[in-house]
Length: 146
Image (cartoon, rainbow, N blue to C red; front, side, top):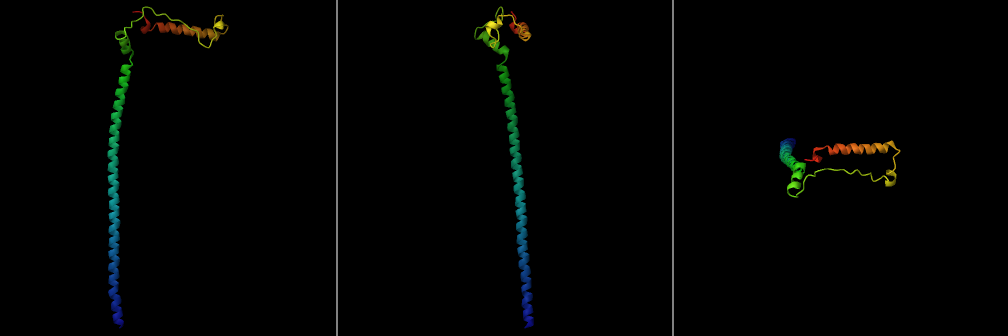
């Protein structure tokens, strides 16, 4: 009887080892599959982000080119020679024969005080600077008689 019990114990022992090794194999297979799946998913995500990055760089370059074209267009439309040409040809304007400047007093000075001789040297310097400015302005090519 002792032999039979011993035999039964020996018969169960390999079965437990088989169950353990099979469950270990399934767990290991599942773990490796999960890791491979995660690796593949991360690579796919990186590839998608790479393509999105290339698309965004291409769009940025296109927008920079368009910005440059628009800036050129604005500069071209607002050039003084173009505006002068339109004024002469389409609006019938012409260059003045003589340019005269009228110096006006600043709005913050009272007219009755401005008629009196100024005692402040700062105010005299301001009017002197305005006169020099208008002389330089009249010397520009734009304001010279043709």
